[in-house]
Length: 133
Image (cartoon, rainbow, N blue to C red; front, side, top):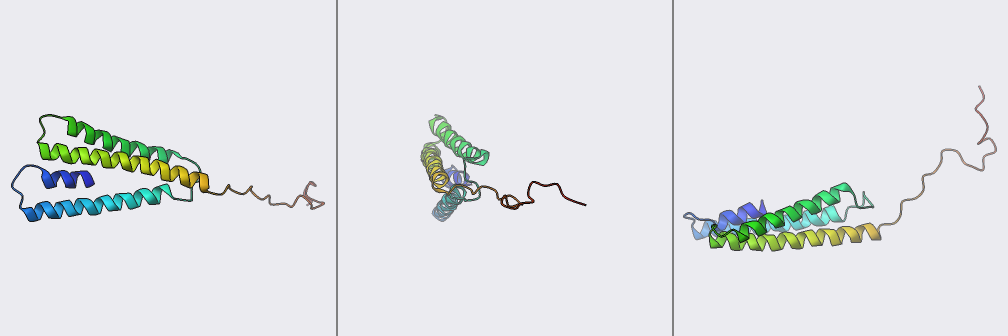
C-alpha cells in the first residue's frame, strides 16, 4: 500500500497540490506502520529460532524491492514515477536488511527453552513399576 499510494501521488493526471500532499502524507504514515509491523514481527518471542514465516517476510520485502528496482529502470515510465520507485526500492531493501538484523538479534538473545518436565518424578520409588489394578 505504501508503494501504490506514493506512485498515485506522483503519477500523471491532474492532481491538485492538496491531493499530492495528502497522498504523500498517507504514504509516510503507511511507511511508519510498515516499520512498526516489521519490528513486531522481528522481535516476537513466541518463536525462538528462524522459522519459515521469517523467510517468507524476507522474501516478500526483497520482492517488493525488486519490483521497485525494475519499475525505476524501465525507460518508458514517467520520471516522477521512476524516481518514487527508486526511493521505494531503497526503502524496501533497508526494511529487508532491518528485519533480518532484528530477527537474528531476537533469536540469539532469547533464552533457551527449558527441558520438558516429566509427569512422574524420577526419585519416586514406584516410578518404574507397572500400575496396579
